[in-house]
Length: 202
Image (cartoon, rainbow, N blue to C red; front, side, top):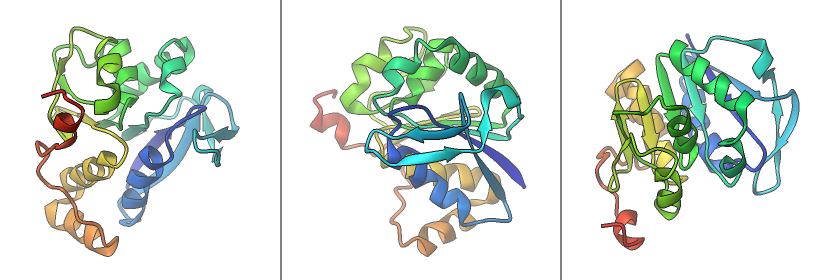
């Protein structure tokens, strides 16, 4: 069973977190999910509902997979040394590191995406890209896979990315069964991204 550390911070985006986690929770024999934050207690999302935190950064748990959501909170967290240090250390240990939306800005800020391809939310693409000029930012992509790093476009794209990660760890057929169980039409083509055109990026 693979252990997933899902990082949260104030003003995280709900679907960025819970969309992927819903899919990882379906094959319950394959993944164990824990919520991680700077402090234990409750962390409030951008939409208002709070999530209960089971693990804090100081626990120093090694996770097989890391999930980092986006949201308005990333604007503050790119200047949070404690959070960035935890991400840097966790990324070294993890087999797979995932970001949704502007979560990729946090990876870019610590330099682990240097020389790699990555993507992000098209509405916030310029801001995310400004966090590092050493990243090969892919404008038109639903999600990007480069080694152990999976970065997705905005919000709902994280669910498509999560299924791709499940396919890597559990096989393609099991990922497709997860999508069917959830009655979700999985976009399996990671390059299909109409939103880049809508937001005048291509």
